[in-house]
Amino acid sequence: MENIFLREFAAALQLSREKGVGAAAFRRLLDLCGMPSLALSHRQEAGASEKRSRQSRLKSSTSAMIAAALEKVASGEMLGWYYSQSGYPFQLNDLGEPPPVLFSSGVIRPVRFAAVVGARKLSAAAVEPAQEMVRQLVSEGYAIVSGGAEGADAVALQESLDLGAYTAAVFATGLDVSYPAVNAGLFEKIRQVGVLLSEMMPGARPQRSFFPARNRIIAALADVVAVVQAGESSGSLITAAWASRLGRRLLVLPPPNDADPAWAGNRRLIEAGAGVFQSGGKAFSVAEPIIDFFTAGEELFTGF
View 1 (spheres, rainbow, N blue to C red):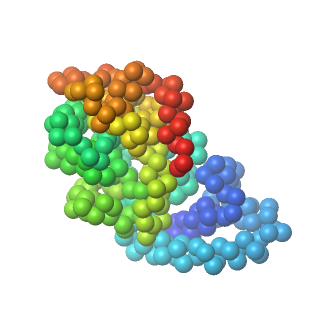
View 2: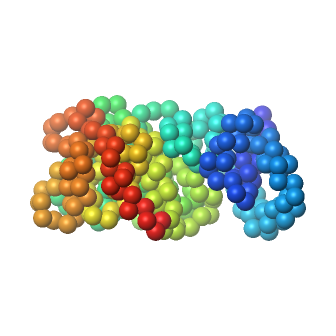
View 3: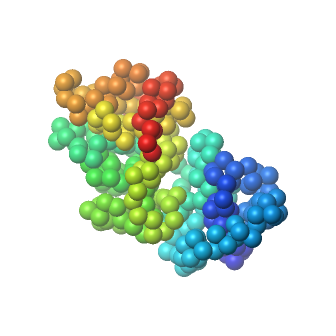
């Protein structure tokens, strides 16, 4: 059974890197053929005239990367998943173009996630409210997912761990690359009791475009997305825009100072109709979907 999985996962990796096969085409091929190996054969037969040159390019550019990834999966260092496989997070199907493959540090539990995201340079005034927000979400039965950056992400993940809640961090790098390095200890704790996830190949170093791509996974995994603190151009607004597009509920901390630009994103979300979290209050029942925020936030995607 293990050899069959490795064969299919290898085919999924190769298919996902075939010229012209993005996430949408990968999903169509898997839906049509059922198994990555059959989908790969179908794809190669359909493009037989270009097959030799395509295989040559694949061999020269990515075969070593695929082999290294398979070695890590075969050794148990990490788990591999492909779209349509049992255990692949079903919530990601809502993206329409879910990641063709994922890597994780362990089995991904089928739980209700709340995403908690925010500024890397978190204001001191936001730390305790962020922790309280996490405590409330956990008390309402949510596992916590975030991105693992410094600031709000790290505060939320650490609070979730302290509460004994199931905790997930989504990397914008390969799973074997701890970024930022200052959070390596936090990631190791999550690895032991929660799960680390990434769509990036092992060894992938951080690139600017990887972070907004990672944010769509965070939003899709969650039932509710809670924004701790966001400036006008914060990456947290990209997560909020994806949440809006996917119909997820949005929750935001109220700015303590209406003039502080560090809270400009919070004000923008509140004006768009996001639920406002108040100390001592509920979380999910207050959160609101704001379907039109994706249109308002489309400029955030420019350049990524």
